[in-house]
Each structure stands twice: as structure tokens, then as C-alpha cells.
Image 1: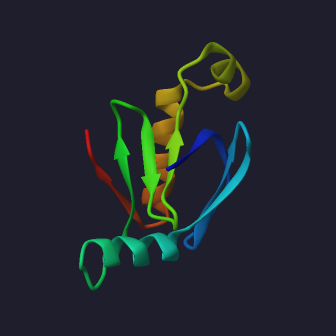
Image 2 (image 1 turned 90 degrees about the horizontal axis):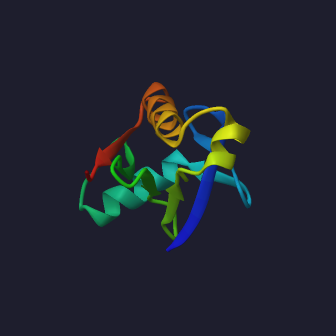
Length: 107
């Protein structure tokens, strides 16, 4: 599974989110994630687009293929983003909820 080192959200709406990271930009289509989550879990409908692990500070989006978003706990990322890894993790969780989607907690 490919990993993406998260820095910030550049744009989010009810269709998806554009995330900026150490190695570029990653667009997450929420509709694609919901469709893949439903197929994987034999559901007819859902609002779940990812799994999250607060202990590891990761999200795994149900894109095809799945992509793991990692929140690094290092000094330079904190200085650059002006937020801790935990703050950035919670910021993404809040943005997903405001877009009226959810993520499943694995912690």
C-alpha cells in the first residue's frame, strides 16, 4: 500500500479533498471511497471513506488502490505546518465530518 506523508488540506467539499504532502498532492474522491467501502463490506450504502488509527496517526482511504495517509511526528514538519501531527490528524477528521462523511476508528 502506498503511503502519503500529510501536511495540510488544500481544498475539501462534499465530493472530495485535495491533500498536500511531502511528495506532492493527493486527491481523494469521497464517492469512490464510499463505493469501494460498500463493496468490501457488502453494504448497500454508507458514509465511511476511510479507516483511522489515532495511535499511529494514520488514515487509510478506500481509493483504488488503497492509500495510507501518514502524519509524521517530526520537528521540521511541525515547524513548516505550524501544527503538531495530532492537531493535523484531528483537523482532517473534523473536515471529513463537516463534509458529512465518516471514518472508522481502528485504535
